[in-house]
Image (cartoon, rainbow, N blue to C red; front, side):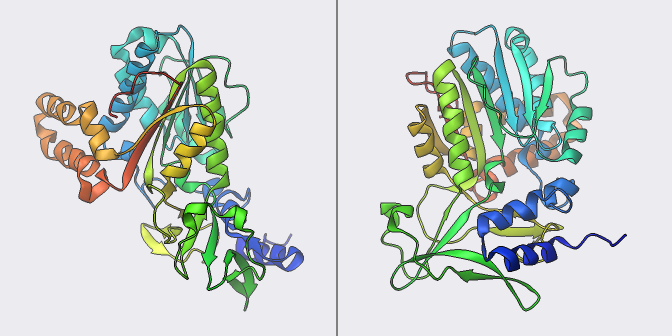
Length: 359
């Protein structure tokens, strides 16, 4: 039996058969191809990136207590669904549920659903959360039918991995950036036909020549879907990710391999691909879905308002030998020069809800 072809070869064959593909389609194949996609075949945490829950237990604890407070502010409903998108190793959820033991009625009301596309990570999450004491289930995507009860959604470094399309401003018009097969490999090229003006937001009309506009249709659709569910039955969503407020025209799509930058089109399936989240666009999509929006607010300011520094001091008092590590982790999460400014928090709530903690 012949060995399966490398993913890059299969993508080149697809392009030869049907023509150039969008950057979004390339990202989807490179990350999620069943045979060779990055998330389908690898356990990337700690190798190509480290997320906030892996830096310190304090991050997940703050988010768990945030959910509990919002639940309390909304009248303590008896049955709620807590969903995490892209749960990594399950560390955030484990820390959130442990912190929620301080609010027993909230924990007792929970059904937890983890949305994970990676079989390797799902197996790790099942071990991490075994015996957590609340009902658990897994889905490979955010399912329909989640508007039957109050819904709480946590998404940390999830939206950055959803596919983006890229449009480049030329002297006369916008053109979509495509992926083509060239000289035995893959390359970027601009679509020959201009992009219809309606596809580019009016506030991007002033982009300079060479400016890039990135948009994630999948992110906007999902934010709208979550917003509709929250607006219908209550609850909240909290998105924490690295990103921007919608201004500027630079491209942010990047590839990482073994913790170092790599070429976006090099060795598809071997590299983590991500793009900065457009929080202004996410917020607009959520408002169109009927939700009230708070933020975005820099992660450092958000976590500081939730009391992360005080939690750090309590951890140090209980474990004096870990003082240096705890303070270093807190600084990394809070410091504007580390994760404090680049990472941002955005909250979705039902219309008329209390302003949530941290905002």
